[in-house]
Image (cartoon, rainbow, N blue to C red):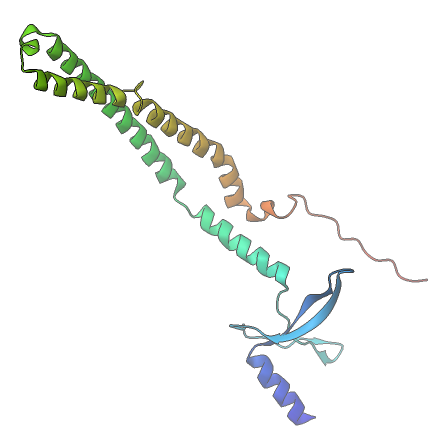
Length: 192
């Protein structure tokens, strides 16, 4: 018996743990599964009414919960404030670029309207006209400028809408899985 106890203790130190697994999916019956776990944490032997308690490993649901909590912790560590600041700066720079493009487009139009410019060779005039059309597509109401501006505004709105959810997840990561109100434990009634 001493040899058996030593063998079991050695295996437990190497990661032998018990866990609950679903044995029958039809009726959700559970069985005790004894297996080795990776990177076992050191154990402290506990006793119950003089018997040593076999160490356990978390079940599959607990592992899923741990992974979800890890993901939520990583999500809460994202630098959202700096992201929003950078987004604001990017939107300001985009607006400034669009304003400069509008001013350049007006300058090119004024240049083209001058009689001296109209006397330039036809190839140069065609090139300037193409440049003017290209610059117009980059303006705030142009083919490229309008979708770009709308996308930046849409992204800003989406990030602003995500802030309350991310704040809630940062403060209480378990709210995505569990109710925010704890449930009362039901105490089983003793047989009479």
